[in-house]
Length: 446
Image (tube, rainbow, N blue to C red; front, side, top):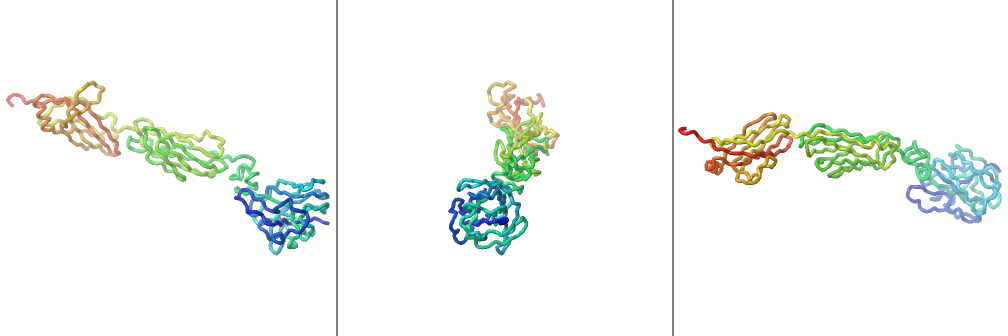
């Protein structure tokens, strides 16, 4: 007899599990050798478990065999083409068969072949089966194809089959389409270029800041850019950006994903495809003059062959617009109940300086130069000012009647002057200094 081909048509198969790997074909490789297979779904075209339930890669075939005389078997994938006919989509996967296998032996063959949902398993041999014909459950050969069935051709089959081919197959998903089963054959199911090892994604982190010079009240925006230089998708990409105790976080906005945190920003950015980039913009207000350096770290669940470029930093210069401007201890003469206190607006101050100057009676206690002057009341007087950048003014303050009486009685009074200022960027500054108020007495006869 010439080459034989049989289509696997199984009785009902249990419901397929979640899409990882799925078995199909014969429902039981240990069923009896004789006796007809029950009625439908034991035909070629009927039966939920006979055909591959999903498209993917055929990774394993299991065959029940106890005969001899068939030194080789050609495993085939048959695709329904209508009218009880099937196309052999090949290729024929030739496997050697043992000459004297043990009774009830199940042969397991590892294969790798693309398969579509609805495809069936077939079998061809170059000799007759002998012995107990373990290939079949039931003695009829009504579903055997007469003659050879080469790959790429279509052939009808006699339906229904009274016997069942004892063969099973396992189909696995192939997410990246590289022809390797994701569960057992592909070490990197997300990268078609890799199957013999784990996924490799090389993420690279860079950082910049703008503007690079800011005042104490202005935010500096740090932009972190994560780029995937590898060939595999980088999964569960994360970013950590410590802000520090002195600085204040204003916002953290990613181009994709989400960010959160207070003293440190944590971002969850999802999967980054090869050649793609994700950015995160973090706005920070410096808490003290000097250099504000933000260091960031990128991470990924996917192995990275070069983790050294997962770190980046950028510095910003924080300036105090009121640096060098303040009040100084001074002796002030009171003229007609009015004193004048000098206050300046630095040239680098944004837009303007405005505020108030208040004079109050000094608190008793040590008067060392290092001590911050303290006021204990009462308030002697107050005035406001509004200056342009680079301008200075002697702010006139009219003393209260109480202050004038006290000064007239004593001739001199220790006081404290307190200036509160704010600029156009809302940078605030409070300065204090000691005053010695002296009553200007008129000369005799005037």
